Image (tube, rainbow over all chains, first blue to last red; front, side, top):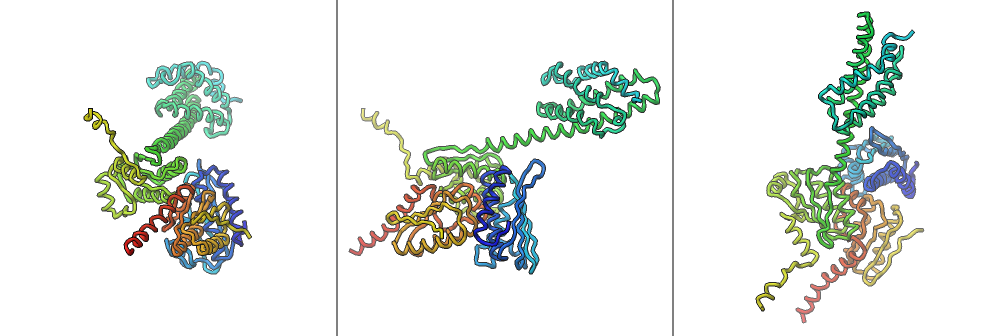
Amino acid sequence: MTITREVDVIPFRNRLKEYAVKVGMSLVNQTKIITAASELARNMLKYAGGGNAVIEVISKGRENGIKLIFIDKGPGIPDVKLAMKDGFSTGKSLGLGLPGTKRLVSEFDIQSEVGKGTTVTVIKWKNG
Amino acid sequence: MKNEAIKVLQKKKKTILETWMKFQLADEGLREDLMSNEDLRVQSEELLNTFVDNLKDESIDDPKNSDFEPVVDILTGISISRAKQGYSPRETGTFVFSLKDALLNVLQTEIKDPQELYMQSLKISKIIDSFGVSTFETFIKGREEVILRQTDEITEISTPVIRVWDGILALPIIGTLDSSRTQVVMESLLQEIVESGSSIAILDISGVPAVDSLVAQHLIKTVSATRLMGAECIISGIRPEIAQTVVHLGIDLSHVTTKASLASALKTAFALLQLQVVKKQKVAAISEN
Amino acid sequence: MEKIPILRMGSLLLVTIQVDLYDRLAENLEADLVQTINKTGAKGVLIDISAVSIIDSFMGRIIGNIATMSKILDAETVVVGMQPAVAITLVELGLPLKGVLSALNVEKGIELLTRKIADDKEPEDADDGDSE
């Protein structure tokens, strides 16, 4: 799904919710992944002016889960380590976006190159 | 032309079954308490039939041949059900390996040429060994399933939320708090708060063996979440050792209401709800008489 | 343009959020609410979020802002009816909504607010008594 405007986030969240229900996630985990997705989508809008989001259902052994990939072609993050720190923000936000999101999901990966863009991949397991 | 051993085994199926049953019944690991001899015979016969019927020229040399899939399927079923019934690995293993003894026994009496006998015995041994291995694999899988189910049950039963008073909930935590446990505790507590409209929750940790910084963090999270919902959270049952470790580890519990015992937590809760517990005035009535 | 209605109940304002908020809507609410507090001289604000299934850091910030702004305008803010899943997520996110009061439901929220407002008044009354 392409996300270029604020309003795009809402249908994206609804789609994600459908997937999360299909996987059989508990309400709390649904809320966590949707909140995480909302944070990441907002980051993408704010810093890169939009990008693409992919939802995938994955499974590993007995566990099912959802994988989200956010790809943007924005300015990139010069210091990923710093961006992952609680309370750090270049914009005028709380600086909880990335580190907070990481706490909400099971697996978190961020690849960023200055001038080329950022790709964030998160996985939430059904019971994770 | 069919392999000599296959011919023998197919012809002597009945004898094999009898020998196999004899071996099984003679074994001291026989569990008549878990399965009757008739059931055992049915099970054994089914396995033997499938095995012998699927034994072909192409497959006898190759234990991994797809011809044996039905046999492995049956073994898997037997193995999992035995694991759940509480058979020991040795008992399940004996079941499969005594079949080998029976098969070899029959081959020995039927095949006269020592060279041929040796060759065929080796092949049969290999096949049965491979069955044995897959039996163990599935046996362990069966046991793991039992463990997983029990884990789920333990998490479920170990987090009862009790309504101690109108508007007051208590949640005794017993055992170690890890993150998945905390999640369950939080969920059931918050859910109950919504359902009962309670404004005070007491977390009693007298049953928690140790509090390290991680456990403390989980507790603080639970308290914060309760507050966000609009209810007050009191932690009670803090033993002196726990108070010591908390301070030594430098964990800040200052913004959490803590009480030594459930009783004093309840007292605080009453005070918050502006309730009073009063002794009945019976004594006064008696003295008046 | 969609708008979140603000209801007036005596000296309290009640806002019930029933749709998924996107950013502009939330920012509008913030502005509207502050205006209304100023106009009506309300002493308390109740924000009912029982129908909200997601609160991310942005929404959290808006709620925090509303609370701080109303405080400056001498009004208390109470968030009522937060879903358990939302509360757990907020804590995990590291967003404890400091300075925001919360209550289980609207009824308890009103109770809390009236008590707060009364508490604020009392010392003033006492002062009046002394001076006379």
